[in-house]
Amino acid sequence: MVCEGLALLNLITDPWIPVKCKEGRRVIAPWQIAESDVLFPDWPRPDFNVACLELLIGLVYMATPPSDKKDWKARTKPDPEGLRTALEAYAPAFFLMGDGPRFLQDYDKLDGAPNPVDMLFIDSAGGQTMRKNLDLMVHRHRYKCLTLPEAAMALYTLQDFAPAGGAGNRTSMRGGGPLVTILDPGKTLWDLVWLNVPFGQPSMMKDLPWMRPTRTSEKGKGPVRPNDGKDEKAPPFTVEAFFGMPRRLRLVGDEQGITGVIQKPYGTNYEGWQHPLSPYYRMKSGEMPLPRHPRAGRFGYRNWLGLLMQTGDKTQREQGLASLALVLEEWRCRDRGEDDSSEEVSVLVAGWAMNNMSPRDFVYSAQPMRRLSDEALFRLADFIEAAEMVASMLHQALASLLDKGEARDAQREEFYLKTEPAFYEHFRDIAEGGNPAEAWLGEMRDQALSQFDVLAKPGLSERGMKEMKAIAEARKFLSIALHGHGKKTGASLFQKLGLPVPTTKAQKKGQAA
Image 1 (spheres, rainbow, N blue to C red):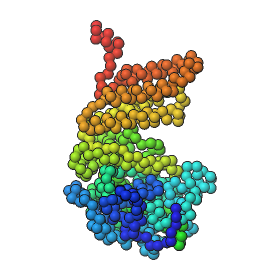
Image 2: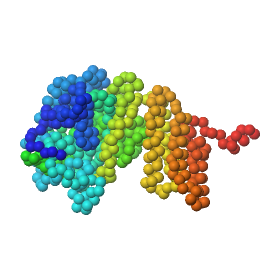
Image 3: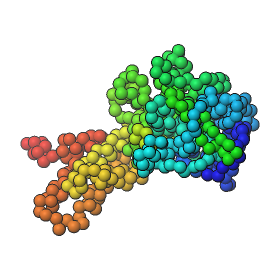
Image 4: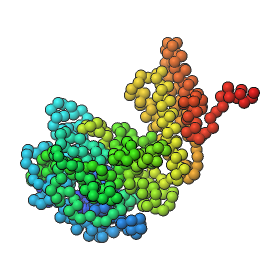
């Protein structure tokens, strides 16, 4: 990263965000997202791009949100000058450096020795990690300094996704490494941002947490709740959902750029907030909702339930144990977006998969999504749950060939990967009212048996008789289950897909008698 001289970057009025355009790349101010050629953020890191989307959505929500569905539709057409005027009213609150309030930084000047700017990156090694030489999956000393735009984006990303960071260093409002779901209509950046802006009223500058003394969380100080917990009927978030400050930070710079960060513990401790771009769940009915977090690895259709669509579990639905992101649920219910039921969008699914303080993987995926009737939703949930059943059958059958652990788990992942194209085809068929259950069963059966055979056949004749018998029996029982036999396996699979369970020989004899 190239460093530039220190200046008073204003995140509202100055161009600082790199973006992809219809022809090339340029750097824009936030209001320019409404220009017709701007397509997507173009930072060198995927977590920056996702955080940048949340930042832009938050800025529009702060300055000029739609009040309701009617207002959302009326203002779908981009208006660069109107957006510029609305945002510039907040410009005094968006200086990165200077003697006044600083964007996302502690209200008071902080004393102490600066940390390297690396600490702003979630995948950078902390002090204890470096001392113990544990930085295998994280990195140290990558950047001596940052330009102001780089520092601004790194600062926002850390505050937005903050993981656990040791004693007193709070996680983000959604916990460490939250899962983010953002609707993408596949058009311009303005179309994406506007589709995800929550309904509301313009905020006041005093609502931004760095414009007032920092609400710290030392012992004896309670957590910060939406609207200070005074109105239980109010939405479970305010503009602070997009501009939370769990970490107490002050950037340090010189003529070279941003060279360090001073950090103090016990920033704001958030409780009871529901970010409109993240899904939540409850352990029990009536309990406080908890944010979802991504798992390391590839995100695919197997992960949809509870994240991109409601689970098929009746108890979870009735007790409200799982909730989609507010914006995604509003789109599904036609409170935003096109009225056309066949409208298809992508859902950008992203987030840091964390192991406590250690990042494991940054998950980023674009998943297709359409509005579905309740009947279609339940059918699709059954298709996903049926795939889970077949994947488990395959995993168990492979015990005759592979030890328990990564090798067998990899085969499960392979099953989902290879069946994904067929699933997406059936997803669209179901959305149109179809029921391709038999086709889905056949494709899953073929894939599971094919994977088993690929591992079993090479060198089979060279194995011992006992081992050959175990492999043959494992394949036999896998095939039997996949053809609908066995109460706990095959019959359950067919019932899940709504297919008639095959009649056994004993049942046929009984019927004949």
